[in-house]
Each structure stands twice: as structure tokens, then as C-alpha cells.
Amino acid sequence: EQTLSVPSKIRNINELNMAEEKKDTAPDIPPTDILYLSYEGNFALTCDATVLSCESKPIQGKSDKVTEHEVNIVLDRTVMYAKGGGQPSDVGKIIPAQFFPPDDTAAVVAEISTVSLDRASGIASHVGTVADTVSPAKDFSPGTAVKILVSPDLRHIHSECQTAGHVVDSVMDRIGLGLRPIKGYHFLDSPYVEYKGKIEENERADVLEKMKVAFRDLVNEDIKTTIDNLPVDEAEAECNRLSQNFDFTEYRKSSNLEVRIVRVAGWPVPCGGTHVRSTGVLKQNGWGITGLRCKKGVVRVKYNRGCDNEQK
Ligand SMILES: [Zn+2]
Image: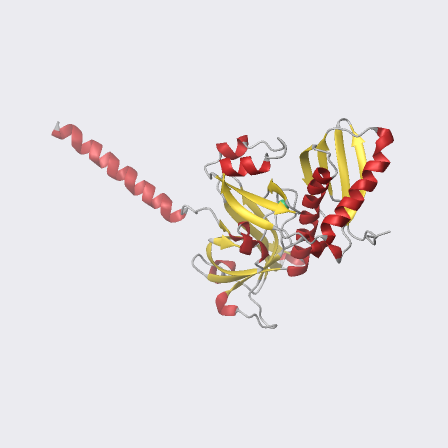
């Protein structure tokens, strides 16, 4: 027995050593703490964080001179919105705490152009560039304390666009069209929400007019946005109270048994986006419903900024 047990122990020790070695070169990175999912986090535009990893590659300009470095930074937490759910990514800056606030001469700043969230691992990647004078390996080495700054204007308009999309959902309820939402596109070029169902051709002009009025009313009522992370049963009960509009099957498969429920204009939906504090905020930029398209059993409700929302 002894002769057998010795090699097996050695084998186990070798495996252990190999596992530890592997851990040294490629540390397990935990899921990123996504701060914008909470109510207060939804409005936060800055936070402190710690670098967990930073990959980089030089970008060469003319005559092979390195002009800047592309970086992919993973942090322990973030306030930057990761693209997805029909909303574009935030842009912003990541600055090592020791260089904050940055001076104009030799700024060590990562200009982040895209944040993406890997759904399987829960890790958010911040991709952008640093100047050629910056050493990504040194200035953004694991353990470095950093400040994250979200570009406020772009975040605000994306939050308005996202929120206005929810108001469209509430409009559908208010005018008694209980159609199931199937897609939201909350990009600034041509935002819309799509529903399964149809509206008869001879009724469309009338329905569109009712929608425009209902949207304007909901904005004027200045209804507060609320955000709660609820157990999946509670979330499903609330969202499907008035109509069987949402399928929670996917949420039940997830290991995270809480669902983020966002209520805009009084209408609850599961959503991961960023939002403005109340429907009244949408007034300044004149958000409203602009058009209706019905095709192949899908109703597309278009909405946008710059509508004339004066009561007639
Ligand atoms: Zn939303």
C-alpha cells in the first residue's frame, strides 16, 4: 500500500503546484461590481476602483512610431455603463489616483471608448487608449487605485433616450393597447420600441394621436423613476400583474436570483439600463412619439427628441 500511496501523493502535489503556477500567471478575475444597477448607482458619474488587469498593445502611426497604446482594463467595480440592452456604452476616463486630478502637461489618463460586459463571467472590460508617454504595464498595473469618470452629457442623453423608451411602454398601457414588447432600440439615431401585434390600418392615425397625447401627459405628470433589485418571484408577480408581458424563464436559469425592476411612468419592467430621475426631465429636450409602423405582426413605435409638445 505504501508504495502505491507515495506516487499518488507526488502526483497530487505536482498537480497542486501546477495549479498554483497557473494561478500566478492568469489570476482568477472575479465578476465586476456593477454599481449602476442600484438606484443611487444609476445616477453616479464617478467612483474609485482598483485595477485587476490591464492588457495593452502599441498602436503604430506612420514610420512605425508608437503613437499610443490600446488598453483593455478590468476593475473590481465600475460606474461606466456597458453596452447592451439596447443602450450604447458610456465613454469616459480612467485615471490612476496618484495622477488625479490630471494636469495638462503629462496626463496619465485612459480614454475609454467602449465598455462591454461578458455575461458568462460578469467581467466588464474598459477598452480605450493611453498616450505613448504612458506605460500601461506600470501606470495601470494590478492593484493600482484609479478614479473612473463617466462623460456626463452623453450618459445623460442616453439615459433620457432609455427612459423615454419606457414611457412608450407606459403609453401602450394607458391607451389600452396591451401588446407584448419584444425589442427596444435606445440609440440616438432613430430610437424605437417594438411590440408583437397589429393595429388595423384605418385606426393607425387615431392610435398615433392618442399615443402622442398620452406620452405628453406622462411627461407632464413628472412621475418618479424607481429601481429595485427583487427576488425573481416578486419581480415576475409585479411585472405580470396587469398583463402576461414578460417571460422570466431566462432569469430563473441565472445564478443571480434577483431581477432589477425599473419603474418609469409607473410601469414596471425588468431592465439593466440607466434612467433619468423622473418623466418630467424628458420635457426639456422635447421627447415624444414620432411615428408608427406596422409590419408582419410587429408594431414599431418611434420616438425622439425635438417634438413640439405644447398642448393644442
Ligand atoms: Zn430601462
